[in-house]
Image (tube, rainbow, N blue to C red; front, side, top):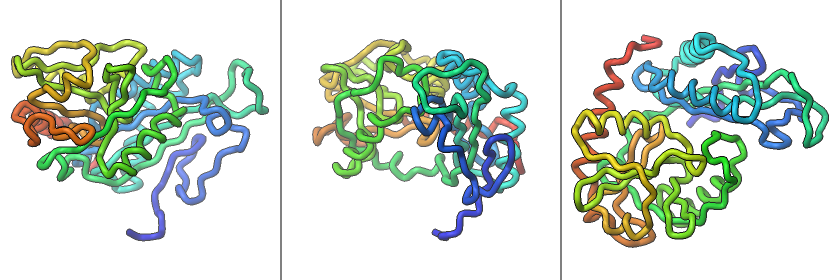
Length: 291
Protein backbone atom coordinates (compact mmCIF):
# COMPACT_ATOMS: atom_id res chain seq x y z
CA UNK A 1 0.00 0.00 0.00
CA UNK A 2 1.22 3.50 -0.83
CA UNK A 3 2.27 5.61 2.12
CA UNK A 4 0.90 8.70 0.34
CA UNK A 5 -2.76 9.35 1.11
CA UNK A 6 -4.25 11.19 -1.84
CA UNK A 7 -7.86 11.00 -0.75
CA UNK A 8 -10.09 14.05 -0.90
CA UNK A 9 -12.38 14.68 2.06
CA UNK A 10 -15.24 17.07 2.76
CA UNK A 11 -14.50 18.92 6.00
CA UNK A 12 -16.42 21.89 7.40
CA UNK A 13 -17.90 22.90 4.06
CA UNK A 14 -14.90 22.40 1.75
CA UNK A 15 -13.29 19.61 -0.25
CA UNK A 16 -9.69 19.27 0.95
CA UNK A 17 -6.86 16.72 0.80
CA UNK A 18 -7.47 14.35 3.71
CA UNK A 19 -3.83 14.58 4.82
CA UNK A 20 -4.30 18.35 5.28
CA UNK A 21 -7.73 18.24 6.94
CA UNK A 22 -7.94 19.65 10.47
CA UNK A 23 -10.62 20.16 13.11
CA UNK A 24 -10.64 22.60 16.04
CA UNK A 25 -9.57 21.10 19.35
CA UNK A 26 -12.75 22.55 20.86
CA UNK A 27 -15.01 20.54 18.57
CA UNK A 28 -17.48 18.68 20.78
CA UNK A 29 -17.15 15.57 18.65
CA UNK A 30 -13.49 15.37 19.68
CA UNK A 31 -13.98 16.36 23.33
CA UNK A 32 -17.19 14.49 24.16
CA UNK A 33 -18.02 12.16 21.29
CA UNK A 34 -20.99 14.51 20.93
CA UNK A 35 -22.06 13.49 17.45
CA UNK A 36 -23.32 10.76 15.17
CA UNK A 37 -22.11 9.02 12.04
CA UNK A 38 -23.10 6.87 9.07
CA UNK A 39 -21.24 4.52 6.76
CA UNK A 40 -22.52 3.86 3.24
CA UNK A 41 -21.28 1.15 0.90
CA UNK A 42 -20.32 1.90 -2.70
CA UNK A 43 -20.50 -1.06 -5.08
CA UNK A 44 -19.53 -0.64 -8.73
CA UNK A 45 -20.20 3.08 -8.59
CA UNK A 46 -23.54 2.67 -6.82
CA UNK A 47 -24.47 4.17 -3.47
CA UNK A 48 -26.15 1.30 -1.62
CA UNK A 49 -29.24 1.89 0.56
CA UNK A 50 -28.30 5.56 0.60
CA UNK A 51 -31.74 7.05 1.25
CA UNK A 52 -32.23 4.76 4.24
CA UNK A 53 -28.79 5.62 5.63
CA UNK A 54 -29.57 9.32 5.32
CA UNK A 55 -32.93 8.79 7.01
CA UNK A 56 -31.18 7.08 9.91
CA UNK A 57 -28.63 9.90 10.06
CA UNK A 58 -31.48 12.39 10.29
CA UNK A 59 -33.13 10.35 13.06
CA UNK A 60 -29.89 10.07 15.07
CA UNK A 61 -29.33 13.82 14.77
CA UNK A 62 -32.87 14.51 15.92
CA UNK A 63 -32.55 12.18 18.92
CA UNK A 64 -29.60 14.18 20.27
CA UNK A 65 -30.91 17.59 19.23
CA UNK A 66 -28.57 18.48 16.36
CA UNK A 67 -30.18 20.17 13.37
CA UNK A 68 -29.51 18.30 10.14
CA UNK A 69 -27.26 20.69 8.19
CA UNK A 70 -28.25 19.39 4.73
CA UNK A 71 -31.19 18.07 2.76
CA UNK A 72 -31.14 14.52 1.38
CA UNK A 73 -30.41 16.01 -2.03
CA UNK A 74 -27.43 18.00 -0.72
CA UNK A 75 -26.02 15.04 1.19
CA UNK A 76 -26.25 12.92 -1.96
CA UNK A 77 -24.61 15.66 -4.02
CA UNK A 78 -21.63 15.78 -1.64
CA UNK A 79 -21.36 11.98 -1.55
CA UNK A 80 -21.38 11.84 -5.34
CA UNK A 81 -18.68 14.50 -5.51
CA UNK A 82 -16.58 12.54 -3.01
CA UNK A 83 -16.93 9.52 -5.29
CA UNK A 84 -16.02 11.54 -8.37
CA UNK A 85 -13.00 13.31 -6.86
CA UNK A 86 -11.63 10.06 -5.43
CA UNK A 87 -12.62 7.84 -8.37
CA UNK A 88 -14.39 5.70 -5.79
CA UNK A 89 -16.18 2.80 -7.47
CA UNK A 90 -15.96 0.32 -4.62
CA UNK A 91 -15.64 1.03 -0.93
CA UNK A 92 -17.26 3.05 1.81
CA UNK A 93 -18.23 6.65 2.49
CA UNK A 94 -17.97 7.78 6.11
CA UNK A 95 -20.07 10.71 7.36
CA UNK A 96 -19.74 12.30 10.79
CA UNK A 97 -21.71 15.18 12.23
CA UNK A 98 -20.79 16.67 15.61
CA UNK A 99 -22.63 19.36 17.54
CA UNK A 100 -19.96 21.90 16.68
CA UNK A 101 -17.26 24.03 18.27
CA UNK A 102 -17.55 25.67 21.69
CA UNK A 103 -15.60 26.12 24.92
CA UNK A 104 -15.34 22.80 26.74
CA UNK A 105 -18.34 22.38 29.02
CA UNK A 106 -20.87 19.61 29.42
CA UNK A 107 -23.70 22.05 28.80
CA UNK A 108 -23.94 23.43 25.29
CA UNK A 109 -25.45 26.49 23.68
CA UNK A 110 -28.32 26.05 21.27
CA UNK A 111 -27.72 26.80 17.62
CA UNK A 112 -24.09 25.73 17.29
CA UNK A 113 -23.04 25.15 13.70
CA UNK A 114 -22.63 21.37 13.25
CA UNK A 115 -19.26 20.07 12.08
CA UNK A 116 -19.55 17.81 9.03
CA UNK A 117 -16.81 15.43 7.92
CA UNK A 118 -17.00 13.00 5.00
CA UNK A 119 -14.28 10.80 3.50
CA UNK A 120 -13.92 7.64 1.37
CA UNK A 121 -12.40 4.26 2.15
CA UNK A 122 -11.45 1.87 -0.63
CA UNK A 123 -12.45 -1.80 -0.53
CA UNK A 124 -14.55 -4.35 -2.39
CA UNK A 125 -17.20 -5.12 0.19
CA UNK A 126 -18.85 -7.47 -2.33
CA UNK A 127 -15.71 -9.60 -2.67
CA UNK A 128 -15.07 -10.74 0.88
CA UNK A 129 -13.52 -14.26 0.81
CA UNK A 130 -14.91 -14.97 4.29
CA UNK A 131 -18.37 -15.55 2.79
CA UNK A 132 -17.06 -18.77 1.26
CA UNK A 133 -15.44 -20.16 4.40
CA UNK A 134 -17.47 -18.53 7.17
CA UNK A 135 -16.37 -16.50 10.18
CA UNK A 136 -15.33 -17.45 13.67
CA UNK A 137 -16.68 -15.10 16.33
CA UNK A 138 -16.55 -14.62 20.09
CA UNK A 139 -19.00 -13.23 22.64
CA UNK A 140 -18.25 -10.26 24.90
CA UNK A 141 -20.31 -8.46 27.56
CA UNK A 142 -22.37 -5.57 26.18
CA UNK A 143 -21.03 -2.54 28.06
CA UNK A 144 -22.65 0.17 25.94
CA UNK A 145 -25.04 2.95 26.95
CA UNK A 146 -28.83 2.60 26.96
CA UNK A 147 -29.49 4.38 23.63
CA UNK A 148 -27.92 1.90 21.25
CA UNK A 149 -30.45 2.91 18.59
CA UNK A 150 -28.54 6.19 18.07
CA UNK A 151 -25.48 5.79 15.84
CA UNK A 152 -23.26 7.68 18.25
CA UNK A 153 -19.59 8.41 17.70
CA UNK A 154 -18.97 7.34 21.32
CA UNK A 155 -17.63 3.88 20.46
CA UNK A 156 -15.25 2.94 23.29
CA UNK A 157 -17.13 -0.28 24.12
CA UNK A 158 -17.01 -1.33 20.46
CA UNK A 159 -13.31 -0.47 20.26
CA UNK A 160 -12.67 -2.74 23.25
CA UNK A 161 -14.78 -5.50 21.70
CA UNK A 162 -12.91 -5.25 18.39
CA UNK A 163 -9.59 -5.42 20.24
CA UNK A 164 -10.79 -8.63 21.88
CA UNK A 165 -11.67 -9.89 18.38
CA UNK A 166 -8.14 -9.15 17.18
CA UNK A 167 -6.56 -10.82 20.20
CA UNK A 168 -8.72 -13.92 19.67
CA UNK A 169 -7.87 -14.10 15.98
CA UNK A 170 -11.52 -14.10 14.91
CA UNK A 171 -13.71 -11.84 12.74
CA UNK A 172 -16.42 -10.36 14.99
CA UNK A 173 -17.81 -10.21 18.51
CA UNK A 174 -21.47 -10.65 19.39
CA UNK A 175 -22.41 -8.76 22.53
CA UNK A 176 -24.21 -10.36 25.47
CA UNK A 177 -26.68 -8.77 27.87
CA UNK A 178 -26.86 -11.59 30.38
CA UNK A 179 -27.52 -14.62 28.17
CA UNK A 180 -29.15 -12.59 25.39
CA UNK A 181 -27.34 -11.64 22.19
CA UNK A 182 -27.89 -7.93 21.55
CA UNK A 183 -25.93 -7.45 18.31
CA UNK A 184 -22.44 -7.54 16.90
CA UNK A 185 -19.74 -5.04 17.76
CA UNK A 186 -20.37 -3.52 14.31
CA UNK A 187 -23.13 -5.70 12.89
CA UNK A 188 -26.63 -7.15 13.26
CA UNK A 189 -26.95 -10.78 14.37
CA UNK A 190 -29.18 -13.37 12.65
CA UNK A 191 -29.84 -17.06 13.22
CA UNK A 192 -31.84 -19.71 11.38
CA UNK A 193 -33.61 -22.06 13.79
CA UNK A 194 -34.03 -25.83 13.28
CA UNK A 195 -37.63 -25.04 12.24
CA UNK A 196 -36.27 -22.77 9.46
CA UNK A 197 -37.26 -19.47 11.06
CA UNK A 198 -35.03 -16.50 10.32
CA UNK A 199 -34.59 -14.76 13.67
CA UNK A 200 -33.11 -11.34 14.44
CA UNK A 201 -33.55 -9.01 17.39
CA UNK A 202 -36.61 -6.74 17.29
CA UNK A 203 -35.91 -3.02 16.97
CA UNK A 204 -35.83 -1.01 20.19
CA UNK A 205 -33.44 1.27 22.04
CA UNK A 206 -31.35 -1.86 22.73
CA UNK A 207 -29.95 -2.19 19.20
CA UNK A 208 -29.05 -0.08 16.19
CA UNK A 209 -31.68 -0.21 13.41
CA UNK A 210 -29.33 -1.72 10.84
CA UNK A 211 -29.86 -0.56 7.27
CA UNK A 212 -28.47 -3.77 5.75
CA UNK A 213 -30.63 -5.65 8.28
CA UNK A 214 -33.65 -3.86 6.85
CA UNK A 215 -32.81 -4.75 3.25
CA UNK A 216 -32.00 -8.38 4.06
CA UNK A 217 -35.35 -8.74 5.84
CA UNK A 218 -37.13 -7.33 2.78
CA UNK A 219 -35.35 -9.87 0.58
CA UNK A 220 -36.21 -12.66 3.02
CA UNK A 221 -39.90 -11.72 2.83
CA UNK A 222 -39.77 -11.86 -0.97
CA UNK A 223 -38.23 -15.34 -0.67
CA UNK A 224 -41.11 -16.47 1.50
CA UNK A 225 -38.99 -17.08 4.59
CA UNK A 226 -40.59 -17.10 8.03
CA UNK A 227 -39.20 -14.08 9.87
CA UNK A 228 -39.31 -13.72 13.64
CA UNK A 229 -38.07 -10.51 15.28
CA UNK A 230 -37.23 -11.34 18.88
CA UNK A 231 -34.29 -11.66 21.23
CA UNK A 232 -32.35 -14.93 21.25
CA UNK A 233 -29.76 -16.51 23.51
CA UNK A 234 -26.23 -17.73 23.05
CA UNK A 235 -27.54 -21.28 23.46
CA UNK A 236 -29.90 -20.74 20.52
CA UNK A 237 -27.00 -19.64 18.35
CA UNK A 238 -25.17 -22.87 19.11
CA UNK A 239 -28.31 -24.86 18.24
CA UNK A 240 -29.02 -22.91 15.03
CA UNK A 241 -28.76 -24.45 11.58
CA UNK A 242 -27.24 -21.19 10.33
CA UNK A 243 -26.00 -17.90 11.74
CA UNK A 244 -24.75 -14.76 10.07
CA UNK A 245 -24.30 -11.03 10.59
CA UNK A 246 -24.94 -8.00 8.41
CA UNK A 247 -23.49 -4.51 8.06
CA UNK A 248 -22.88 -1.92 5.35
CA UNK A 249 -19.15 -2.66 5.36
CA UNK A 250 -19.49 -6.46 5.01
CA UNK A 251 -22.99 -6.92 3.52
CA UNK A 252 -23.42 -10.31 5.22
CA UNK A 253 -21.02 -12.85 6.71
CA UNK A 254 -21.84 -16.46 7.71
CA UNK A 255 -20.86 -17.59 11.22
CA UNK A 256 -19.41 -21.09 11.57
CA UNK A 257 -18.03 -20.95 15.12
CA UNK A 258 -18.78 -19.07 18.35
CA UNK A 259 -16.43 -19.13 21.34
CA UNK A 260 -14.68 -22.17 19.88
CA UNK A 261 -17.90 -24.18 19.38
CA UNK A 262 -19.12 -25.16 15.91
CA UNK A 263 -22.22 -23.38 14.60
CA UNK A 264 -24.45 -24.62 11.77
CA UNK A 265 -22.30 -27.62 10.94
CA UNK A 266 -19.25 -25.43 10.48
CA UNK A 267 -20.09 -24.32 6.94
CA UNK A 268 -22.01 -21.37 5.43
CA UNK A 269 -25.65 -22.30 4.95
CA UNK A 270 -28.00 -22.13 1.95
CA UNK A 271 -30.35 -19.49 3.39
CA UNK A 272 -27.43 -17.16 3.99
CA UNK A 273 -26.17 -17.73 0.47
CA UNK A 274 -29.51 -17.11 -1.18
CA UNK A 275 -29.99 -13.84 0.72
CA UNK A 276 -26.44 -12.69 -0.01
CA UNK A 277 -26.71 -13.41 -3.73
CA UNK A 278 -30.12 -11.71 -3.94
CA UNK A 279 -28.74 -8.65 -2.17
CA UNK A 280 -25.95 -8.25 -4.74
CA UNK A 281 -28.38 -8.79 -7.61
CA UNK A 282 -30.61 -6.02 -6.27
CA UNK A 283 -27.63 -3.66 -5.88
CA UNK A 284 -26.73 -4.04 -9.54
CA UNK A 285 -30.18 -2.78 -10.54
CA UNK A 286 -29.45 0.58 -8.89
CA UNK A 287 -28.39 3.51 -11.09
CA UNK A 288 -24.67 4.22 -10.93
CA UNK A 289 -23.64 7.53 -9.36
CA UNK A 290 -20.35 7.51 -11.29
CA UNK A 291 -19.34 5.52 -14.35
